[in-house]
Length: 232
Length: 232
Image (cartoon, rainbow over all chains, first blue to last red; front, side, top):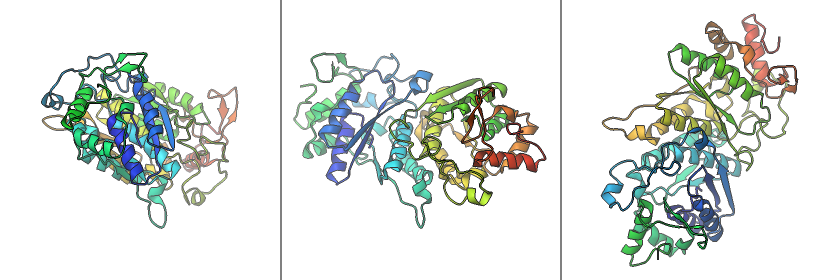
């Protein structure tokens, strides 16, 4: 399963474990400006019982393959937006072909480990803005993946691989509700697109509380009459 | 376009250039045992007029993501096989999910460079053995790619991306014939799965002349009453 260290993928890990899956977590160091998410991914993987956690290093940003994203280049991250502003266009935090590359690595890992399922935390909040978070995209990746590997030509019949996106119809509030039922400790996660350094914080930084990622969390916790443990 | 430095992708580059495309070449350092192909890719890119040539470094082999392939692990490469033996099963040189990962990187590069087409050198010889070289796989990747990027949600209408596999119905003899018509210098390419070191050779090694890759080339050149320039 793809594990970013954020709220969504932490919840997906808890759901997969609850369903009885043995989970191999896969994170990516792709030159993202905020490295705290890799630390968060490690904490989440350990806390929620992934049996392995790998970090793949991609040099694609170094040759411009991911350029133009605020997650990598020094572009201002939008702040203080309402939900309508957030979904009006493809966010500046969009990274070209990122989910396709991440899922392709997961496909290689699934093949060598004999996994039957790949889990990804895309959800209804994302797919309004990111083309590679939409249900049709996930279905098309699954169709392609089922033609791509040895399992696809296995005799007497191919072994199907499923791309599971258990959050795909859920909003942020429902995701948090489901995660809390399953015991997810959201204090271990990291979502902020623009954190400030803080040597006293376990992740080495404090979330800004004003970017889309922070606001989506805060508003969802507030709807549940809870405070976001990261933003108190 | 994906450029391995082998005979097939060199021919594809010549075809794309002949069709008037401006070509960006993309090669991969994925821990393959024989690095000569990266040198060959550079020579081919320069000789056939690619305007850029990038080498992406993948650490996936380091964490076992590509394990079990004779191209990476010290597994014996089969020698002296006839064509029936070569196609009886998935070759030991198969690398899990490799083309999916390579095409995903190409998709990112296409998106940032505004490319309309991705070229890949899969062909009829390959797709008998490699699941990710079959026409149905290429079509499924194209369908997925057309849902994956900003271009897919561009208004008023999406900009289509094509995955072009101009060799897909050709055998090795026809490929060489087409390449020679277009002036490809096959002495610059590298195909061998098991070369020996040779400091006097421009690629630093000599092809073995006995693995499937060498034999497919030699037999195809022989059908054209020619000697393979690599094997004299």
